[in-house]
Image 1 (cartoon, rainbow over the protein chains, first blue to last red):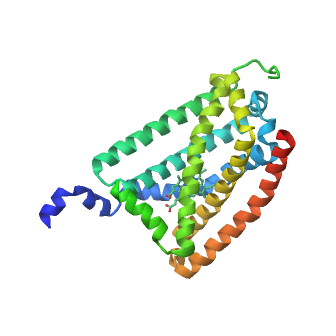
Image 2 (image 1 turned 90 degrees about the vertical axis):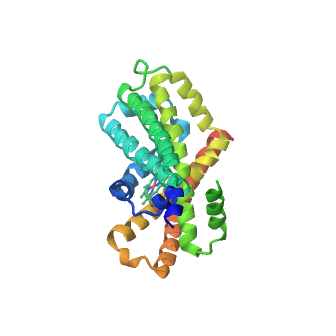
Length: 138
Length: 134
Ligand code: HEM
């Protein structure tokens, strides 16, 4: 028994009670999920259903971001939705990946992807549409 | 890899009925939406990094193929949201209600509510698509 556990620390780790981080991550998924209902649904209803992708171009984005309220809305959307989603990816991955080493690598890759893509989104949200306003019709 | 194979075989073979299908659909829709979101953050950021390329990306989204995919994306967003609320409600507010019968009934209601919201949204998106692309 002792030897078996030493050989397979992964099995031990995978069945151990979750630590503080995992408990917070679990609660985070539920709290952020409730916040995502207004954030994601308003965004989807407006852009996909009411406005529609055929009416969207750089002018549309510029006009929308001219309103500070919508920019702040988009900051929350970016922050909450992508963190919720990427933590979800990590949780799913950890159900299949049990060795501590492989888990560390997986979590590192997911964290790096989250950081880089969030930064790209944040730079655009702060920088805004990179053209004179009002814009030429493309 | 063998643990992945065991899991995938378990997904198909396990006969957990509504609760099992509700869980699987939550997982697939969640992963699908976050994959799209990662792409969508980058394509929207093009308005700052390269506005001309942003217009190229939007033209792809306006194609018929992506228009149909968009209808399914909206299904994923509605289902995952309602089912997420369902899970959060049982976990945080009424944990004693995690009983098989309650799950069967609530998963059915989740699907019905999803369809009630999704069908009118789809009709509007598809008529918009037909108007512009045909
Ligand atoms: C609209 C409101 C949303 C609610 C109420 C919600 C709720 C939840 C909850 C409670 C979980 C945890 C499930 C569990 O531990 O069993 C979860 C998982 C997940 N969510 Fe969301 N979510 C929402 C939106 C999103 C969005 C927009 C994305 C994509 C960016 C997303 C991606 C994911 C992923 C990938 C998982 C992991 C799936 C799994 O564990 O099988 N969710 N969601």
